Length: 309
Image (cartoon, rainbow, N blue to C red; front, side, top):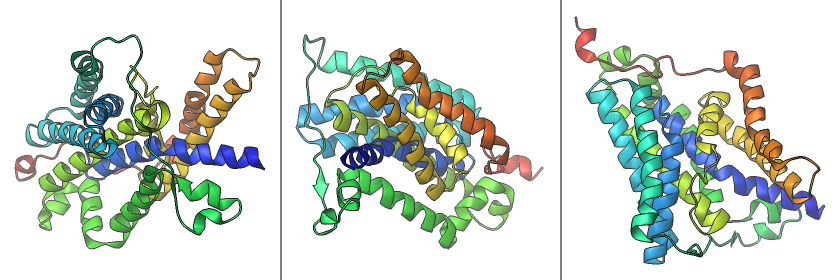
């Protein structure tokens, strides 16, 4: 029983970067912006979040810095694709490379090369009174760090906003048919900008989570492809917040299983175990891709002037 509790606690702990990065991807996609820079934004968020936390001595300020960096990348993505009408995929790849480059450059400029890596305190466990005492569920659900609770609440709020509010309906209309949305008086450009900015901020926060929970320090390529997996997870989740949350639990479970297999010394090369999450992703995409419901205008730029020609 104790082993099961530990495993489920680790699954919830590991789902957070998947949830945050995928919800950020979903937000932009709901207005037609397809962000493929997740891996770069997450690495920059991890690097900048760690550096600011280390310099200031406050993880919350580090999270804000990571979110600000992600928001700037989202703003750039929106500007180049919505205002300048440039190709979304190429701009996203460019931002990916910029993010990766900055993530390795900034620590060398600010801290330099050290014999032992500098460390920051990891996020503390927040036990919810009374609920944390519930047998079995208490230790799993109600003794986690604050970002675990945040990611769950965020997913619920995003679902409610998108499917139960007028603003959410308007936002989804932009991603399905921006010409119709525009004719109804919905500001397509504004919707694309704010979803890209907010989505980028969430992706940056997903990156900051890694050094603040897993390692206490920043290491190059520490995202280990989670940004790319977030794209697959968004498709798997049908661009719906609650399905993405459920899918994140599955992806995190596969990741934890691979990690636990290494810990117990399973007689397999660790490289094969590292491949497990990606093999599971490929299998899932093969089985679900054709059934995945994506916004009709995903990845396309809307030109109001061409509509009137």
